[in-house]
Image (tube, rainbow, N blue to C red; front, side, top):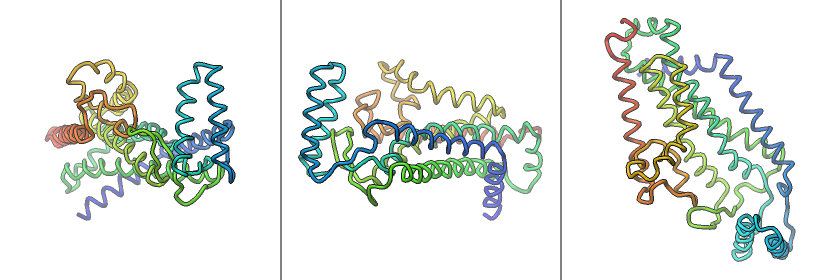
Length: 316
């Protein structure tokens, strides 16, 4: 047991000792600050409602209605805004001004950047050992190849979790500096698969980032498998990035096929079950998607293990 923890620590250290890793974090930090700066210049980003907030919302709805009559292309957008305002009034929920919590929630979209960074790490963590010839130093140790592979996989997942936590924490701090904090856990009104509903900010953060973690987990595992099988970091990173970018298009292209529901990328984004987008096939459920993902994960892990633990690996 001590060996596995030592190996994991060693693998994590090797990830964070590289300058490229810190460049990734600097890039992510700059991106977060840039998004905050752009959002701060958006009209209405810091709008606050006073004591007569219900009257203000009513006036706002009237203005939106007039605007729709003049500009037809605004009908859908303004109708949604009117419905949200009406929900606030009907349920006595005062709209909170845009703050750090809402900035954090919106920044969940940046998890795709973290997926990209994790793919880069996962794609090279095994392949680079063969490319640099350092795999021999690992294999001559009195440690099984299964333990070596497991330590590398866990190190990748630790990197992904740390990076996601970095995104969440820095987003909150940046949001607090740019927009302030409306409260410890303000009540927000959102639109989901059931229509309009009220949620707590912390609950929405946990839900949003939790769903994104699933896609991050699967893409990291896929890149890790390619790295283990082909021992080529460029191939592993290239394939994983291409499929991550093209996954949605692939699913939509085959959407009319019954078997499209079994495509990996039709199931990685579980947020579709909590939004009005919906799954690619009506018969799909969240339980089904989780089951499909588990099967894919087992296949990825088994493929990595079977190839890496062969006796002819690296000529050893």
